[in-house]
Image 1 (cartoon, one colour):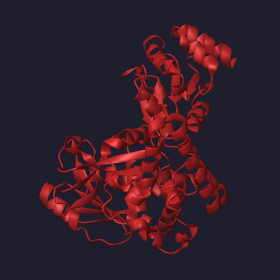
Image 2 (cartoon, one colour; image 1 turned 180 degrees about the vertical axis):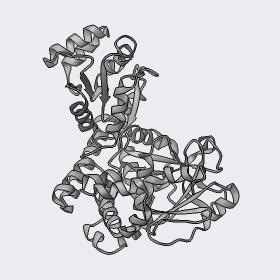
Image 3 (tube, rainbow, N blue to C red; image 1 turned 180 degrees about the horizontal axis):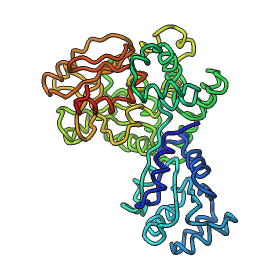
Length: 441
């Protein structure tokens, strides 16, 4: 299975300003596999240490954090000589030994020659709990489920993925049905590596669904095992309310739908917990389109998406049969799956701020508004081929964006101020917008 993040890791390895690297991401998005695969591809030797329930490592890091002493201890523990030029050091589940996290500062300051990558399924929570953390002394890489492009690569459609990268939309349109079929599969399978691998090997939707159920069960176990006891029920209720929240026409998250009379302050900690461990994406409202968008963020209004479209389908009981019923899949849940899919793809694009827009009266809503750092781009999401864009026109008249995007099941088409971008090509949005800005259109 190919992950685009490998390319980022290779750049990190060659960087003269390399710092210890922390890979963030939800449980089971493939962090451990990625680190080991990177070690296999790019280093002569890999030393892998899992800190989960590892009392010996807890003892090693408990006293002073002298890097020479730590390296000697790691060599004795693993039985491997650690050559700083040719060995990748992997610290997995590093949040279980907070002193190991703290040691990264000293590796950066006193032993930069060592190549260290770290990960942990609940690392985001550890970082926000006041762990002695070396701010400015580490690099970060966020890992998400497989994108649609990675899904194409994993399922034997490498040439179709290449075609998307080239943005040869004449050729892409000729093979639209192949892309649409693959997209339907992706809606069902999602991007969790285990589910994708199973589907690539066996094409068995029932097996995929069983894997997704196990992943969701593992998340539920994490709630009980790692979250403070008093917020576990709230985490569960909030998590389980997300599919019904997304099924609404107005997808703004409403605390009162978790349970009658619920208030924001009761659930803020639960929401932060889910966000910190990468299980939910919070997309805030903006009421103006200026750079940076974050300056216009409405902290009280937001949409919540979960980590993966396949898991969302599993939570809602989406049936395999739906795949065979034409475009029914894209109409079900009033476009919930489609917005989830688009959000998930946008998250994989680096340095992209993701928000949504509504005016104060609520009469105009744009599904996503993205900030590339250079321009603000409105994106309207259509689940099928309905191309009415009333809100997008209202938004354009008010804010005069350079370019607007509508993504749907229709073919690629450039109009004066609007680009129709097929859903299966949404990952190309930043490149398309850049071309527009540079006058290449």
